[in-house]
Length: 263
Image (tube, rainbow, N blue to C red; front, side, top):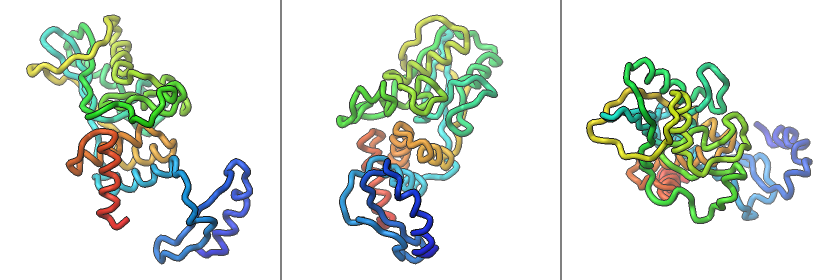
């Protein structure tokens, strides 16, 4: 790339009024040469550009093929307990229908495995979240749940909490774990209320699904600027580096990984 080429590529989009007062810099990653700069030393609120840092930390700290497993265990009374492991891309869509995220694990797949297991399920419950600390950061606004920006963060979520699974800007749920459990109950034709319940020591696994690889989930997070997925990816970094699996712990882990890699 050349400075003249970058200027030519940016000339038209930089005239877009929706960008407001734009500052920034483009550099050659191989040589470090600055190819374009405009007010690059002026401090700005980073907003979703911060997700670039989360993505970088995840890709540096984690196996790019790492997957997260969502499981269903059944107790002696026939209660199926849905157990998440931090994968908010879990889909509620029927088998073979479009999904929002790329090649996600699906609740419909879990339901199909349960039906073929020969186990009679009488009710559905969800396991308590394994996320430490509050499900919402102190700076978040509850109104942003209905506004479609965020959902309380837990270890069991589906569609990043979206109420409409195919709408990027859909309002989100304030109880994502129960919503995921209700989707499973609906697929199984069970009308009993879904509750939160601990997993008994003697419960046995009857179904499981795996998320798409880490690299795919990072790509989806960046493509859709998905706040929920950004938070859970940061928590994956925290888990892999011995940090606290919490919203604050995820932020600390991202900064630590970046510092270790010379940022």
